[in-house]
Image 1: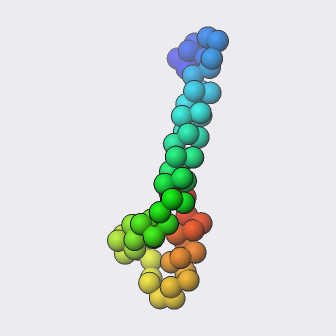
Image 2: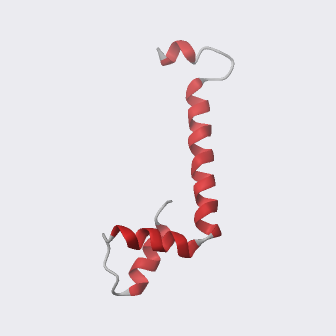
Length: 65
């Protein structure tokens, strides 16, 4: 079914990839814009130890939004 849709001028899979890429870029800007809020959000899940603190900070910096 997707192959039939892809035969148009702009392939559907390319539109899906562009939309997903735009979402990740937007989420990245949100994370960079307020890194402390993102760190608090990760801390609320209580899945990572808070000690040592550099571990949680590293995860917040590296983890995708």
